[in-house]
Image (cartoon, rainbow, N blue to C red; front, side):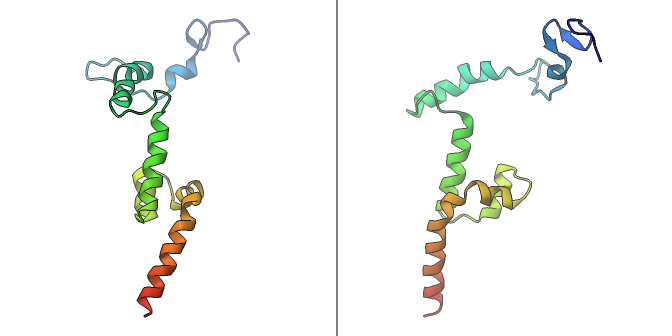
Length: 115
């Protein structure tokens, strides 16, 4: 363990070594992609073009996409794979608020099939 205040275990003063070890997306020229740069130069202009509030986060769009797909009766297994969830239970637990309407449509489909 490093003594408090020492620079051992740090890649820059005040910045823990752990920050350097995190996975980073790199550009073709080898420079690390800066999240703030992507947000201000690319994501925010796209939000303006789409007439969405600038407070919209990328994760909000991901959540909206999954919710819309599930409400359109897209197979939850496909949605789970698209989101990169390790198993379908994560998707079903996260988006269970969408499922009651899906249960109604499933009941109607079964009723029609039995006629």
